[in-house]
Image (cartoon, rainbow, N blue to C red; front, side, top):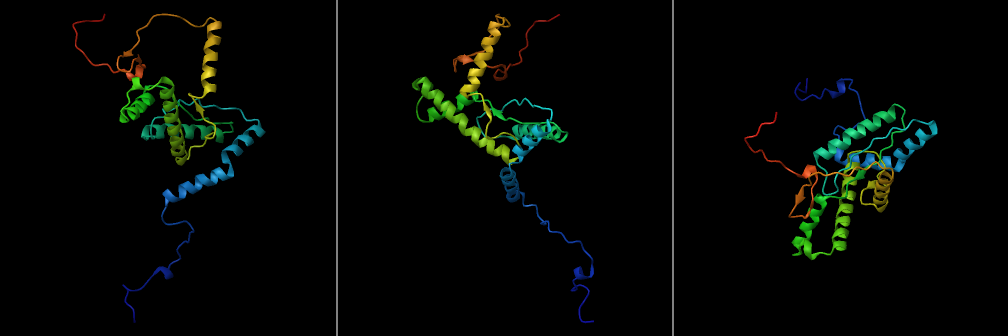
Length: 223
C-alpha cells in the first residue's frame, strides 16, 4: 500500500450531488444584476398589463411618504420593505396591486438643511431672497428624492419609480388648493381657535411632531 489513509482523497469514492449554484452568495454583485434584469424585462409594467387584461380588482396602498432630506435609514427601509411585502401578497392573490411611491418635499427638516448650507457660505436666512431660498429647497429635495429612489430600488422594492408623486410638484399643489376650495364651497370647513406652536427662531408654525414636552411637577390635580 503506497499511500496512507491521511493522504488519500475520498471525494472520488463518494456519490456527491453536483450543483451549478455558487458556493458563495456574492449578493453585493448579484443583486444589482437581478434588479437590472427586472428593469430590462419591464416586470412591473407586465404585471400591470396582465392585471388589467384579467380585469383584476384594484388594490391600492396609500403610502405615507418619507422626507426627502437624507439617505434612508433602518426605519425607512423597514417601512418600505413591509409595504412591498403587503403589495406583492395582494398582487399574488389576483389583485391589481399597483404601488406609487412618493416623497414629502415640504417642511422644516428640509429648510433647516438648506439654511445650514447657506450658513456655511456666510449667508443667513435673512440674507437670502425668498425665491432663491425656495429654489434651493426644491433642488435639495429633488437631489435626495433621486438618491432615495436608487436606495429603495436596491432593496428590490417594485413600483412606479419613474413617476413618483412629490408634494412639491405644481400639479400636486394645485390639486390640494382645488380640494380645499371644493370643501370651502361645500360648507365642510370649520373655523375655530386653537393654540399654535410657534418657533421664534424659525419664525414659523411648528408641527405637533416637532414639539417636545418636558415633564414638570405642579401642585395641580385633575379630577
